[in-house]
Amino acid sequence: MTSALLNDRYRILRTLGKGGFGETFLAEDTQMPSGRWCVVKLLKPTNNDPQIYQLVRDRFQREAAILEELGEGQPQIPSLYAYFESGGEFYLVQEYIEGKTLNQQLQQQGLFSESRIRDLLIHLLPTLAYIHDKRIIHRDIKPDNIILRSSDNKPVLIDFGAVRETMGTVVTSQGTPTSSIVIGTPGFMPSEQSIGRPVFSSDLYSLGLTAIYLLTGKVPQALTTDPLTGEIVWRELALNISPSLGDILDKTVKSHARDRFSTAREMLAALQSGNVPISPTVTSVPPVPIPAIQTPSATIAVAPTPALKQNSNSAIISSLIIGGLACVGIIAGLVLTRPSAVESEQNNRSEVENSQQNSQSELANQSQSELANQSQPESSVSPPSNLSEQPTLTQPIPNQPNSNPPITTNPSLSNNVQNNSNFSDRPDPKETVARYYSYINSEQYESAWQMLPSSIRNDTRLHPDGYVNYYNWWDSVDRVAIKNVNLVDSRTDASEVNISYDYQMKKGNSTPQTLRFSLVWDESQDDWAIAGIKVL
Image 1 (cartoon, rainbow, N blue to C red):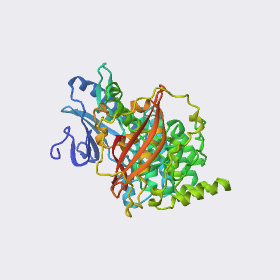
Image 2 (cartoon, one colour):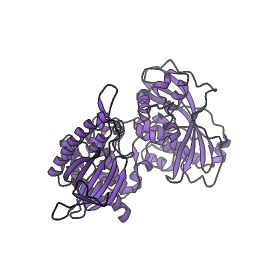
Image 3 (cartoon, rainbow, N blue to C red):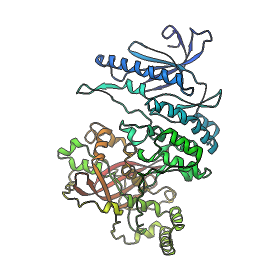
Image 4 (cartoon, one colour):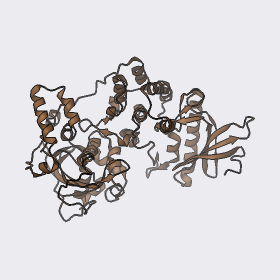
């Protein structure tokens, strides 16, 4: 491809990138006196059905026309020079933006300062407002899709998702054209976008996480979430930023679209004024009593597919899909009993409550072996008052028979908690389970799905349609009430966590369940990863 002219005009100079939708090249336009450089994107349809080809072609032309209009009306969007098709493949020719992506800037120059982040947002938000005014959602905002142009250091937004969605066009059994793919990058896209329902604030969410990445150097998957609220915790990693910018970014990356800035202009106004509007729909969760250190805490779940609920394996699938919703109150116990969280609580509690917190801190500092020798009476934590008002649920689903095989197991682990000096500086494995359920409680199903091992995600018995089944299941669940979470085995590279809970469906039925999570240490992420789940 590098020797011949493409479309009798463009000489390919080098490859810029490859992906599932095709390739991107740097090319020279031989029919322009300047021999200007341009970007040529080769796009390949994911479906080769001849009946769909004409539909894809029509959509491609429509999306190309939109890109042309956007590039002409906004200098921070690349201009579209041409589009054509050849050999059943589609090509876009766009303006070449000389500069470095935000990701390249971070790798070469280090973390961004607050002033750089403010400048970036102030110059990029008007571009987002412009495309949103056109009723267009970008859907793939991330550090690699924003280039700081060398000529003026302005951010340029590249790689809109609509054309890639067009390449994934299929026709349903009812004859309705749709897309077989979800546009976006895991971690940077919110939950509503992961199920194909993006809104304008979905772009703002992605932009907010991009800013947090530049401030902290942490990709979204490496950030923790607050088990009480399900919101992203990041400000302790960027201590030098002002409360004003911190509040703005917190609002931008809220898990629910209704709690974010509704428009790019609203976010821009907050940056310029320093005033962060509070959405009237936001509700606070009442504080939950913190259990004693000896009290087990946490949650659990995975989800069965609707199709499997009709057969004899329904109990296993229910157990898997169910395990995921974490009880908000209990997960709070995991995080709030840490020393740092206790210290923050001491500033807002009365002297009596401070005394109780100090007692808990002393207990937390006891050695693991001492705690293991103490008796662990079963206890439960009352849910927040707004949850306790739910009607009594009946019709529990029978427990999983012992004869059913586990979903996934790790037989190398024993049932005894072990002390290991190399393990002491690692996070509590229960926090990984808690994070999984906090994602589900906050309806961030895509993030929870990504935490599951491929052995579960690719199990066609559980998820014959993949993520679609997983989402549909969790959307039918009202909540999971956690009874307790126990660390039953901990080693340097492997752990096991038991969790007991009652999950309640929106239809009114509920059932108790106990699962065991097998976890392995992931050196690349410096954290525990879920390796398997089985019913106890």
